[in-house]
Length: 278
Image 1 (cartoon, rainbow, N blue to C red):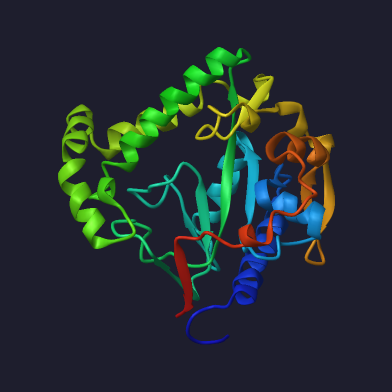
Image 2: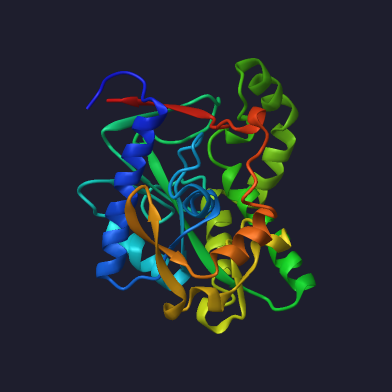
């Protein structure tokens, strides 16, 4: 183990170890999961991480997601952060942290938690309505609930990259904060979000997505992509990791011409935090 701030390659190594650990749990417990978003893009295009990034994202159908969280919430090696065990919790998905590392946010009032370190993101996939108009209405409703629970955590409504800007936000956004707080506290909004998430059971739905994103039609997928027979193993940094067989369909839908690299000036990570060894 090193000391001081982690370099990009060190972050990747720690995150990869978390992924391999979770992959083993999922395989042993027959849980459907796939690397996704930029991680799946990296696997297909680079056989591992996107070179200038360190993100690892995985997705699971809601039933498998819930089972994985139950397994991880008392894990002795890594720290699970989710709405089931770290309250109040700011995200609509879960994170698994390495406790040997420390995350230092560049934002004021970010409420990441003192347990935060190098992580992987774990996203639930929930069912959505078949009709596109209904999908958008559902997405707007879920976004309203998300804004409610996020902005009733302390002074998170004033989060920013500078103390001066946060000070202005405290004044300017206070009426908004008071409005949603009068409707309900964090628990009220979080309960609405979690309850509504289950409105369309995954295995009875034709389409699915991570509900925070479904206002965007490119973030809605056929649930059949996540049936047991539609997974495969792909090479990710020398490890065989689970991924959907419909990877090309997803990547084209989400990224367009995904095999073409972005311009050199865009080959950077836009993280709002740094990592340090404890």
